[in-house]
Image 1: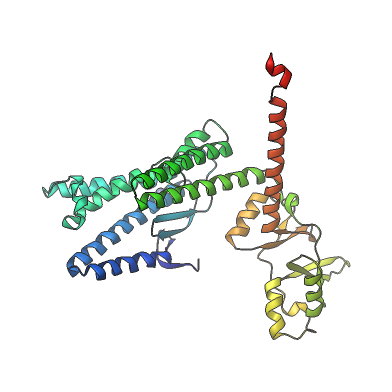
Image 2: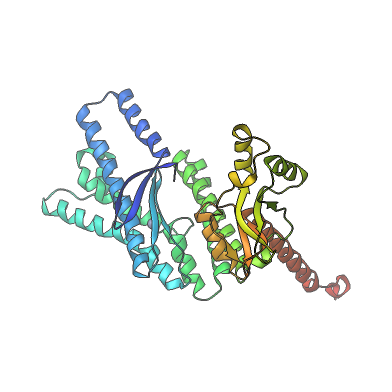
Length: 383
Ligand SMILES: [Zn+2]
């Protein structure tokens, strides 16, 4: 979270401002210095922008509260210059729950638009969207229409917009999750290409930017779905490293350097002989900790003086996807794998990546084999 600044919390959910948000603020300030317009209009536009971002926070809270009603906690809400992002602890496997969580965000914007619209209507002012040409004349009407825009934009059926999730949830009712994601991602990328073409034809850089954003989002979503489908049902045993070097608790830093240079291991479990003579895990020595210690410690010091606690240990029969999620959440690159207290392996984020690569290559080969079998024989095709 170091790239973001915590600005507060609502319902126990931390709200963060991403650093790139500062660029937007600086951009607006520079724009008004260059324009050297009246201070009042600068204050109004900053007010409108703050209003928009308040609506974006409310939109994200809509997702978070809907998720909470399905017992899915939200870890944080981060504001980017292009919108907000609510990080849910997990995506519910029931497509209808995902549907309601996705719909809740845009629904908040619809409610805000209706409430603001009613306010404007009550004061007898015009409600036409033409105010958007002179947004500072009527900030409330502007905000009302911007909320309509937010709801429509977010409901476009393309990842990473909420509409992409709605589409996937509806598709997942009739097909499996990975297939549904792939189809939704393909539609998203198709729309991105359309936006891109439109952006080029109309010389609209904003459309081009949205096109790139949607394209990348759709790709990320389809990769994640592929990852989930490959690791689904796999245990830690399937992906762990079984050939690795351990260091004894009385090994010196020199020994550790030798071990580091001799092989490709990055992190070394540190073990000591237990009462039954079997090695027992006492800590882990990551490469960075070793390198750091070399400038402050003596080469003859023992490794236990710089050993670190592993983030957590796992047993070899735990489900891989759960462990992987925990590793990514706690930014833990290596965890020791135990079986009845014995160290039997190491699980690294790199291993898991390799497993997915292997599984994906094998699936492609199988698909190619199937295609070959399905293809008509040359002679038969003639007749
Ligand atoms: Zn949303």
